[in-house]
Length: 193
Image (cartoon, rainbow, N blue to C red; front, side, top):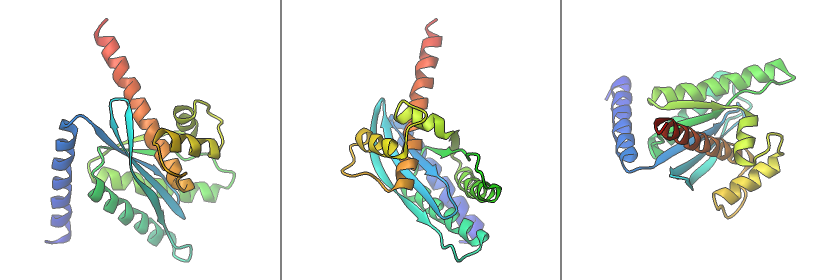
């Protein structure tokens, strides 16, 4: 198949698989912690208020390569993850304000690449600030990295703490799961009024 025909076939197959999974009553969420050097990803399944760890890891780029090639590595890595795990939604951490404008700009490129890769697969993209993620996972918006990592380990019953960027991505996925549950509860409550 030609490139665009193959991509169209992959997206159609992906969407059909996603609809079949949604019919079974659970949601698979892919959390992404974007970075140009390391992009973390974490995948969880949500059924009601139960969370189940599926996978996590990192996409590492070479610092010796220019930004366009690093972004392609991130895009290709995420595309592969979408194809393999067929998530129903993607949650991405928002760009924080950095003291170094250049660092914030390159981080924005990585984040944009993550969002574009998800949208190209027909996925909903949800964005959360670091404060929202920490509140959802730890219950405290100014929690430290280690607190977040330990809570991710406990909530997902992991045998060990995930690598830092992967743990952050799992935390973003958990944040979306909690946000989704809260929105469903509000919708149900408002219908009963």
